[in-house]
Length: 66
Image (cartoon, rainbow, N blue to C red):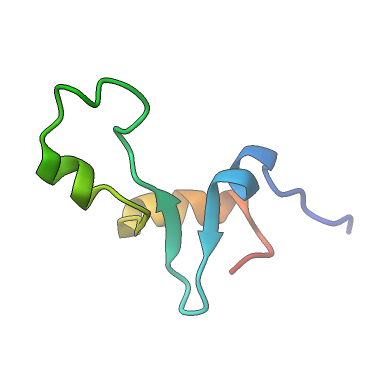
């Protein structure tokens, strides 16, 4: 059986923690920051964990990273 391939886009965008949660960058910060509130920009710093349904999809893209 050949090795399974990891989706290249997924390995660049997501990271799986030691407990199995999926970390991803915060969404909604590419452009249009003037119209966003200061609170939104402050809370959207860094990374966040994906919800369980989204994490399940991402984990299927990265078979060896579980």
